[in-house]
Amino acid sequence: MDPTNSELLGHLTNPFKNPDHDLNLIKSISDDKLIEAAINQDSDFRISFLYIMSHLLDLEPDRCFNILKKLKNLAPKHSLQTYIQFLTHTDSKKHEKIAQLINDLSENPPAIEDQETQKILKSFLSTKKPSSVSISPVVEKMVVIVHGTFASQESWWRWPSPFAKYLNDLTQGAVYKKEDPFSWSGQMYDKDRRDGAEGLKKWLKNHPTNELTIVAHSFGGAVAIFATRLGVKIDRLIILGCPARSDYTPDLRHVGILYNVCSFGDWLQTPTGSIPHTRGDGRTLGDSERLVNVLCTKGGTWRAPGHSELYTEEVWKENNLGQLLV
Image (tube, rainbow, N blue to C red; front, side):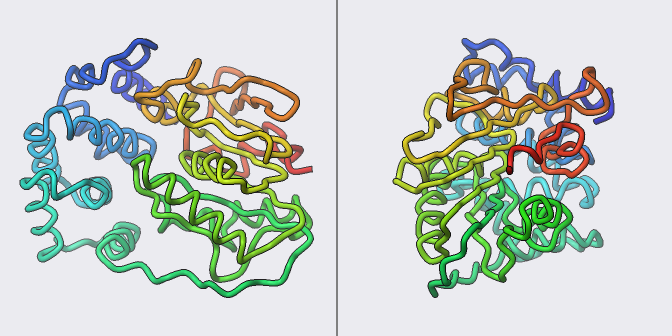
C-alpha cells in the first residue's frame, strides 16, 4: 500500500484508535475524507468507507444521503462500485431518501465501461439462484475458502483462482472445486454473518468430509466462528484479518486448531471492522493450545500487508503461512 494511502486511511480511522471510542466520533470525520476514501483505487479504502458509512447512517442519515449524492456525480469507474455496494446492503425501508436513490439507480443505471463494476452492479440488482441441496459423497479431506463482506461476487475465493490453486497445491488437491462452492450474502450486518453460519452448516451437511479445513477472510471468519457455536466441527480454521470482537468468539470444543492471521497494516480488521465490540487490541485472540495468533509482514518488518493482501500468494509465501495447512 502506498505510504500516502496509509496516511489517509490512518486519518480516516483515527477516531477509533481509543479503546473507549464512542460511535459519535464518526461525526468528526470530514465528508471530504470519506469521499476521498470512497473513490480511492485501493479496495481497502472503499470498504473502510462503507463500514464507517453503515454507522453514520444511523447517526446522521441526511448527511449520509448527501455524501452518496455527491458520489453519484463522480467518475463511475472508482465510485459506482463503492456506493452501489453500500446502497444495496442498507436497510432502505428505514431511510426513504436513500431508498429513492436506490430506485433511481435501479431503474436508470448510469452507463458503465468498467467490466468489474458492470459485474458487481448486475449481481446486486439480480436475484440469487438457490443453492443445490444434493448430497455429495464423503471425501477424505476438504479445504473450503470463505469470502468476507461484499466479496460474494468476487473470484479470488472461487476455483480456479490463483489463490485457490495455491492452496490446492499445498494440500495435495483438497480445495473444493465443484460449481456449487459455499457462499454467503456478504452483507455487512451481524444477522447476515449469523445467517451465513447457518448456511455453512447446511452446506457442510450436504458436502461431508472426514477432515475439514476452512480458510476464511475478514468477516467470513465470523461466519466460520458462528458455525462452531452451532456445533460444526472444523479440524483446522484459518481466519485472515477477521475483526477480533467480544461478540465473535469461537467454541473451541468444535475446533481442532484455530490460526488467527493478522497484520498491523490491516485497518479493516481494526479499528473499522471491530466497532463497536472490540476485544483486546481488536486483532489478536488469547493464545492457547488450540488458538495461535500469526502476525504477517511484507517486504521486511517495517511493511505490513493490507486487508486484501492477506489472501495473496505473495504474503503467504513470505510469512510461510503454508505450514498452517500441514
